[in-house]
Image 1 (cartoon, rainbow, N blue to C red):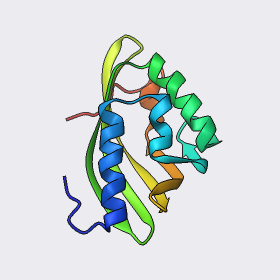
Image 2 (image 1 turned 45 degrees about the vertical axis):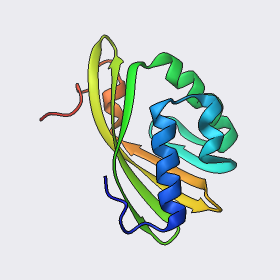
Image 3 (image 1 turned 135 degrees about the vertical axis):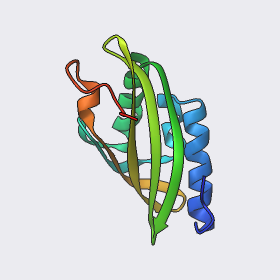
Length: 132
């Protein structure tokens, strides 16, 4: 994974993001997301950082065999972009999909996040995931 051109603040955040996804939980969301952050999650709308922690705990409980692998990152000013790959058992089949999180980082915490991916993969009739 790259990170060669990241500021120390972004590199620290990227390391904490990887740590979060190594053992994710709703209780751990405040390690990376400020409580008053503005979150936009594809398919789930907008929420605060505090609400996101609750939502994430509920979502993780529903996603069987879920793994999230951070793949790469880049930054531009206070913005940090992290590409990732997720795999989970959805509607009876293992599906793998990729996306990008766009963060605004202030004082080491995400104060804004846009989680961007093709949410059709989450629907029963949706595509099966990445076609290699």
